Length: 280
Image: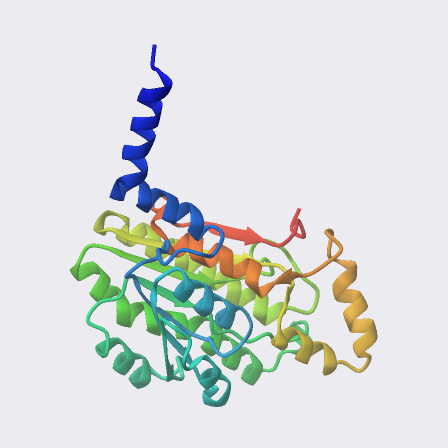
């Protein structure tokens, strides 16, 4: 039988060890007090970081110890992230091949590529002109194609890499009124994600996509205000929320951290739905 003296000695030894300090430091991290993070040392490049989900994700990833390159086409809003520990900003138009390739050349290696840039077009196919179709596909799909093609070789060179693409529940998952070209583009993102995951799974590459429902972001608020009756538009958005509220950008950012971390090392080719049950 272990005596109280034995327990005291064992406890004293444990608390004086570096291993126990590390363990309790990790516990404290859950309360936001630790200098250790779930993404310590990881190099992450993400797009659309100026506001909304991209901004929340950039901050959350950096807070967990990642070295984040946050890009956006909106330089003024993007500069608001200047000075945030762990984040460096760069104005990049991810629909421009030369800018994407230049961005890739600036990084010797990348652990995680997070493609968020997107555009929401409102309307059915009858409201979608060719210019609307081309613009949406260029931003929502072609930009991800360019980014993946530019950064994937760096990941393959070290036989390790993680790509996260922003898709949507409004895609092949769920038909949504007045989201014709948007849903088509996001279905394409899901297809791109699964294709990359399948093609490079044996070379150490993971690829997943996040499929949010309605997220309360500046982009959404702007679209609501642009409607003929903003008050009714807001009511319509809220009416389809089974939980009685919209998702927050921060909640999506938590999922981003999980997918970027080694905690999700066995996860690839998936559609990570975060929609409060909207698609059920």
